[in-house]
Amino acid sequence: MREWEKNIRRVVPYTPGEQPKNKNVIKLNTNENPYPPSPKVLACRERIDDLNLYPDPAISDLVNALATYHGVDPSNVFVGVGSDDVLAMCFLTFFNGDLPIVFPDITYSFYDVWAELYRIQYRTIALDDDFKMLPEDYQVPNGGVVFPNPNAPTGVLMGLDDVRKIIEANRDVIVIVDEAYIDFGGESALPLIDEYDNLIVVRTFSKSRSLAGLRIGYCMANEELIKALNDVKYSFNSYTLSRPAILMGKASVEDDTYFKETCKKVIATREYFENELKRLGFTFPESKTNFVFVSHNKVSAKVIFDKAKENGIILRYFEKPRIDNYLRITIGTDEEMKKLVDFLESIL
Image 1 (cartoon, rainbow, N blue to C red):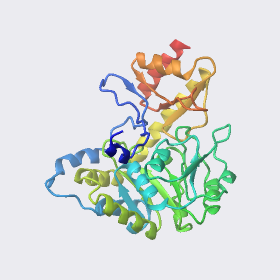
Image 2 (cartoon, rainbow, N blue to C red; image 1 turned 60 degrees about the vertical axis):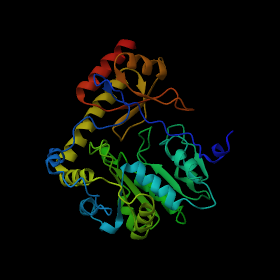
Image 3 (tube, helix red, strand yellow; image 1 turned 90 degrees about the vertical axis):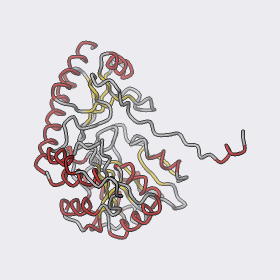
């Protein structure tokens, strides 16, 4: 080994979902919204100017819009480049204790990557046989807690009472509730930030707001936690969000009617698809997301994944313990899901 190689920080990176260059496929693998963003967002393209200037480092326009929308003070809002950036900043800022942080064994697979990258000790806590988190399992000494709700890739929602139990049992550490999919049928933990000064609620524009391509995420917490996040951000990358992203993000927040209509369409399609899956003999936990986590007892997930890809349908397959016979299937348009159902019928 060359001497300088000894100083390279080596990690096993997160593996993102495939982004095919061929547009003539049905892409159901990365939980993007199948519908375009609000027309008000698209109209902003004509007002994008001053790209020779840096954007507002405080992202004030978008922070204020989000604060108004959620009924909180702007000092309770932090915005970053997608929820991945927000979560990474949270890990860097708050998880610096001597005890390991904890999160589920089946969950968003970026958590362990960030922990490894920042040299944070961690341990995973197993979901039960129904892929549910049990609050009592999180009553253990730890240096912080993070979990998605609804969980990914399972789609299982934890009720607010159980979320409260986890926070209550961990008052001495930061608890992060990652609500990337909360708009598709869940009850948010946001009201609890007034009650618990150690709670951070994270959201994204990538799923329900159809803006995965802009990379906008945010979190809400008490003023002291948000200040700590901003201090780290300004020490890491002051100008995080671009001018177009700030402008378009604000327009999305201000078009609540379109946002809610789009969520309703995705939920309706999910319910149709779940009924078809049951008819075809698939099993899956109840989903409160824009995807379904499915298994079939006669045809393996890997076989379905490979044959679907051969037929121009891209799904998500995880070759991991406990879930290697499951597929995560994003909810697309009605037409896309009907084509998928026809394909599944043909191979079953």
